[in-house]
Each structure stands twice: as structure tokens, then as C-alpha cells.
Image 1 (cartoon, rainbow over the protein chains, first blue to last red):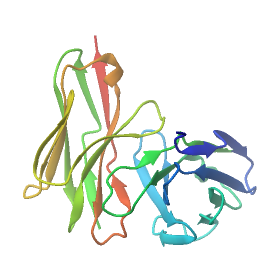
Image 2 (image 1 turned 180 degrees about the vertical axis):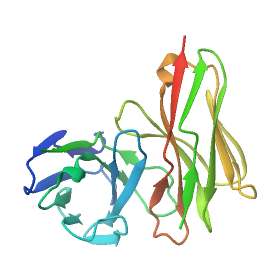
Image 3 (image 1 turned 30 degrees about the horizontal axis):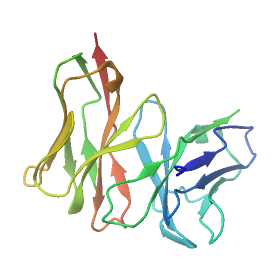
Length: 115
Length: 111
């Protein structure tokens, strides 16, 4: 039973390029969350999605960032025109149900480095 | 809004007991969760308190007092492998269901 799968594990981009981070939730999970983490800091909420719906995107920067979770396929976090400040670890998590479920299952993260 | 506060770091010796506190400000929430993260890897779920009181899971216990807006994680019989970051987290009623994390406590276990 595979866990939450994120790829790539490491992603290097030059300023101005696009970064696409993929997340496949655990089998049977329909809720996906994206978090960002800087070194020595906590996990900052970005977006919460269900299949084909964005439930809460209050943590997403207004520009350059977008996320989707299509009916088929993985969830994608897309960062356009990356800047050095976007360098961070991006974690995806999934759960089988929504608000009352306290347990999220996390992937190993994607480390984004912007040169 | 909501915020959670934890000590930034704690040091203890093998075999000892350590308590990591978490104080929070939120208007209403489902419960308090704890997660462990080793060296920037995948955070893993440790414990959850929906109600006031103590929850025990092996060497780890977690406590919640809603009236005091306070909780803690208790680690007993510390082992070197317990060196990690520990995060408390809440899901509030009126924040759309997202899980909000504290800044984390770096636990260092010494021989």
C-alpha cells in the first residue's frame, strides 16, 4: 500500500522558469493539502483540495501559484516565473476525509531550489 | 485567526522524560494533533486529543486542556532516535478544515 508519492524529490529551476510539483495521494484518499517549509521553520499551509475542487486556498500567494487536483491523475502545484524566495521544501499530504479527520499522511516532499 | 506557540528547542538525555508544550489561540477547533519530523523528511502523525485529558500511545502521551488553551506531548524513556522536530497542530471550525501547525520544537536527545 503505497504512501503519498511526491515527485520530483529535488527540483532545480532558474529564475523566471516554471516549477511543477506532483503529488499522488494514498489510495482511497480524496483530500489533498499542500504545505511549504523553510529551513528551521514550521509547515505553512498553502491550499486544500478535493477532487476537482479547491476547498481553501487562503495560504496561496495571489500571483504565480496555482494548484489543481483533477478527477484523474495527481495533484499539481504550479509555480510560474519562480524567484529565489520560492526555494523551500513543498510537502503534500492526504486524508480519506475532511475536516474532522486529524490525521494527515505526508509525502517526502519536493525540495525546490531556484538559482 | 489562530496561532500556536511551542518552545523552539529542548534538550534531554537518553532514558529521561521530556514534555513539549503547546499553547494556542483559536476560536474553536476539533482537536490538537502532534506530528514528528526527522531531518526535514515526511512529517508523521503521532497523537490526537479531541477531548480534554491524556491520550497514551506507547512511550508517547499527549494532553489537552481546552479551558487553558494548552496541550503537551510527553515522551518517556527517551531514545536517540527520538531526536527530531515535533509540531502541534489544530483544525479550527471556521478555517475551512485546514490543519495549522506550530513552528515546531527541535528535540535533541543526548547520550
